[in-house]
Length: 326
Image (cartoon, rainbow, N blue to C red; front, side, top):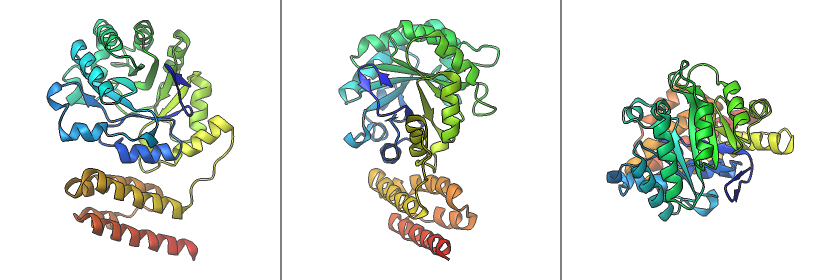
């Protein structure tokens, strides 16, 4: 799988997710085999470029591999300027978001709202591609709603404008995250264009990833929500689709150790005033896959001291591990 001049490690990508794909989470997913990870979506509003929140979203380190940054907006010149600024900051790939279904994004005619206006899509893509000397990719949905599925048309526009890879989430904006992903429409896009196509939507296991690749003919797959609390999924997917082998999941002991390290990294990355809040949602996701416990979750969410969070979490994991030995 190549994006422009870059050869990716594999065909298993981590989707950009607001409030989730920060540096600590991307590092963990990369460790377990994600071939490319994207930063959280960055607004093209110049007023927020230099805020602390934006700086955290753009934070990158070499162990994460390529630095891919996603931007969102609706003004072609502003989008181009934002892309250029991000390249100055070290972005090696610029990804344009035209798939986000959030109301607050769509109200500004950004994200998936842009799919309603192919002419504007073309203007944005041409301006951004012309503004930077790095590969530009695009992420879309299959259309605005079921009566207006235009992913093939948008795919052709993207190819003509110099986009280097296209990710298609197999749902319309109206579908949000409900219903089943439309793999037939991803397949239609792949058959219509020559640039790499990345399939996204409902990929929650190694076998599902292999099915989606085989069915759609896509060049790669992108995992989003299924990675929450389950970053080791990338290892299983990579082994099956790249090496045709079934991978043993990490032991419970390894998982608990990685979770503790992840929470500690969140504390360090965000600082004591914010890190413990970010940690809460990740712990909730991890517990779903290890041992759902509403009582412990309530106890953990009441803690506002980072050190106490780690102590309580480690004690909880030790109890689980002791039970496993019995």
